[in-house]
Amino acid sequence: MNKRTITLILVAYLTILWAAVIFRIDYFPLTWVPMYSVYEPSETISVKVWDKDQYRKGLKVTHRDGSTSYVSYKDLNIPQPNFRRLYYSRIFGTAPPQHKQGNTELGALNRWVRGLEKDEPRFAVDWEWRMFWTLNKTLRHEPSDSKFIIRMEADHQNRVYRKEDLLRQDVRQVQIHTRQALIEWQDEWLPRWEHAIL
Amino acid sequence: MPFSNSISRAWNQFFFTGFSGESLGLLRMYIGCGLLFFHTYQFATVLSLNPVGSMYYFIEPIWYFHLLGIQYHIPALSFAVYALLMSATVTMMTGKWTRASILVVILCIFYLKGVRDSFSGDVHHRYIIPMQMLLLFLLSKCGEVHSLDAAHGTFPPVQEWEASWPIKTMQLYVALFYFWSVIAKVRVGGWEWFSGEGRIQEVLIARSVRWGMTGEGELVKNSLSFELAQHPNLIQIFSHFVLAFELGFPLVLFIKSPIFRLLFIGGVTTFHISTFILMDVNFLLIPFVYLIFFDLVPIHQWLKTHAWPLFRRRPSIAG
Image (cartoon, rainbow over the protein chains, first blue to last red):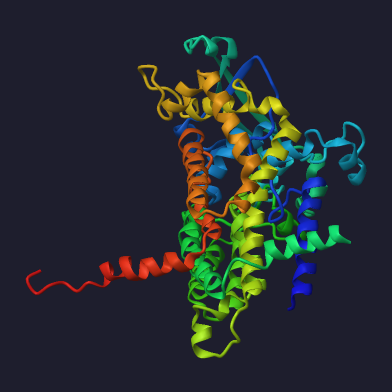
């Protein structure tokens, strides 16, 4: 390759990268948005408290035959940090950060490019359906099986601080909120079952 | 016309000068060495799984898994891909079948990163810079110097311009990586993001209280983060430092003095260590890529004359 070819490659390379930035194509390996870039000012700061014993035990599930059990990261054979995200976020309908980033302040140009209406989100995932699909498929339960999971439950605590108190370095003023998630299988999802999530 | 000439001159001056073929070959070797640690650190969680355990169906496959129709994880395959990744990184480092090795490394990273990020749908960004570097190594003549390929074959000498453009493009990408970080934060979080009572304070608190409290009301972990979160003025100062360094990162491309470069890079490394300790933002090993900002020829020479002999020293008879 001569200098001219390399120059053309570099121009194409830099154009692709900047286009990815401008049009917010934040996909690996082009460009990125830091995980904590979304910020919505608020009077309070609410944070999840991880309970090791609880999430190690797993999600409480009810099977079609009425029996209950727990599904842990070991049953699913996934790393603990990933299971934590299922337990504390996905079951509560909370999307991963890149979805939140992609839906925030998209701007007129990027809405127009993607054909999105004014308040239409770029990423919209039905996490309840995904949870049932992922767990049942992994554990090899078909919808007609007696062990098919039809309900999932998880709960955790949030510690809520008022910024005003933090400014006074008063950390004793904290409220504990308990959040509970209970999701149930819906038969209307049956046609989706064979088509998977792809 | 004079304007386009000066642009062309500046372009050639930036991309096509500054490094020798030897620098490029050494960079491939040292980056390969760093990657051996980096891969293991990044994919340790995948390697903690049972190779013959359940095949997990991804809840949110990464975009290219979606495109290829990959919807579940075969644990034993991940172990095999990891072994292949490490072997290919070693051959890349030693310069044996260099281009093919780099291609294998790239494909293995795509696979393992795809697996790791599809389990719960959280996409991590730590491989973006190494991946860009590998793509540029792939297009370059990095395998023609300081390599087993070069020892067994005859290659024409690598010209300065051929050695410089991949390294300079890597430098430019790294500078832009940090610059884009500011663009993204301002775009989706606004300038408020950098305020003392903004996102940084939130993350500090989240990181400190998430492991809960002891019976005595003490934090289980990260009490330093919690302490800092209570001082918004201090956070404000730090966040302005972060803003200045991220916006100013492209300036490193124009710093000629290795000492000043070293100081700047030292500052960036300190930043990553601090965010790891205080906020659990895990870019801890990424500073190994900053080797691209230095000519490795004198460093390698120094190591050869001063450091290697220490390892080669034979034990004395008395010893």
